[in-house]
Image (cartoon, rainbow over all chains, first blue to last red; front, side, top):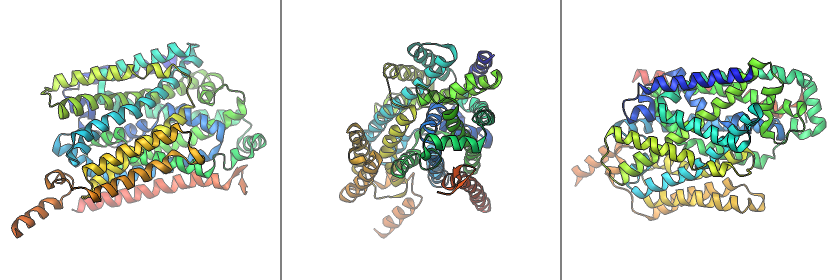
Amino acid sequence: MVVFVLLIYMLSVIGIGWYMKSRIKNETDFLAAGGKLGVWVGGATLAATQMSAGTAMGTVGFHYQIGYNYAWIWPAIWASWVIMAIFIAPKMKEFFIKNKALTIPDLLGTRFESNAIRVISVLILMVCFGMTIVAELVGGSYLLNVVFDVPTTAGVLIIAGIFIAYTVMGGLFAIAYTDLLQMIVFAVGFAIAVPFAISKAGGFSTMNEKLAAIDPSIVANGMSSGTLTAACISFFIMMLGYPIIAIRFYSIKDNKTIRRAVGVSFIFQAIVAVSVTLLGVSARIIYPELTSPDLASSTIAMNLLPPILGGLLLAAILAAIQSTVSAILLMLGSGISHDIMKQVMKKKLNEKQQLKITRIVVILMGILPIPFALNPLPLIQQIWINAAAMIGSSFAVAIFLGLFWKRATTAGAITSMVGGIGSAILWLSLGNPFGIDAVYISVPVSLLGMILVSIMTKPVSQEALKPFFKDVDTLESKNTFAG
Amino acid sequence: MEKFLGLSTANWMIWVTMVVFIIGYFIVAEILNKREDKK
């Protein structure tokens, strides 16, 4: 029965992808769902992009291991989304519409008049999001292993194959409309599982007493405040410059709808946040001997829940992985076809050719991380925290100061991006020396790099500032008049 | 450390923060939307 529910779900998702294929006429449709999404589909697609194997398996696993207090990452993520929705998204959307641009490398390349920044951005995206695809493939293979007893290696290949095919077929139209279905399945699947798990663990109070007996920190400060703050900062800054979310904002109808959709996504996320926390800690009582904490959610689905609910929960996990992998593959596909080939190499491509290239790149970028996913890896959530630190340290400062500080220069942005990701990778590879988390080093490097180098170098032209600052036109005409 | 139903009050604050956050956000978002309508 579990397998039946899972298969029904997967078939309906593929069906939606196939149906949506007919609605794709051009690159904007494929990459940004035509910019037509409303509050509910928009809110669902925003929340679904946020849900991944990192959430469905990794976060549950972290709560299994650490306890409750890791849930503080949610308000940190939301704080970042508020800044995005109120300040960044309107400017970004205006730029995207006026310039027929679709990607973050496009935005940064235009603002800083630099093809080098376009190339650097795409390379950073490939490295960081390649890591997250690895985490998602591993999560998917765990799921297939628990449900079908498929060896992990074969599981990685199967998951990669299905998701690549789906993304190539339907683009963001398919993802956005299946996201609503996915988000409902995800929120309902996880929320319904909670009472079963808590009751099996002996009820809420008893469960907490048992947890405290295993380790008192599970019901108190399981993760040290320094590490927790670092994780919160990592996710906060990642979301400020998160390219997948940015394109989702573009796919939503207008600014008013964006603000409401973000609120709707918070409701979805809150249901999931409470559910994954409670599932993780209850699994610690019910299944104390799991070989990996990442197996907690799929083990609950298979062994604890009634078959239909178990199937629903597994479908929810698979949905989370699929939505994230598809969105990442699309973003990387557009990075190569749109940013590198069209903007940097100046290839004259018609809509059809560009769509074809994006699809080919999606296939290649889906295949590339597979070898990495076949090796032993740290916990899924740890991969995401590291990727978050790297993504945030590269993009957050460049995007934010690029949009709100006219004096930010090309050299400043390059220093900020390269310095941010470079210092993050260096610090992580040294194993966080002195017990200081990477983000405490990489964010100041990125911020200071931008400010100091910008002050010392030549500002960008007024032409480059025009799409981002309304008063530039006025300033320019005043100067011309005075001159 | 003070506890309620076996869970520390600091951890209960996570859920309280989430609820307050969402309600606060909707209020601010609607104020901004109305302001935009007036323009």
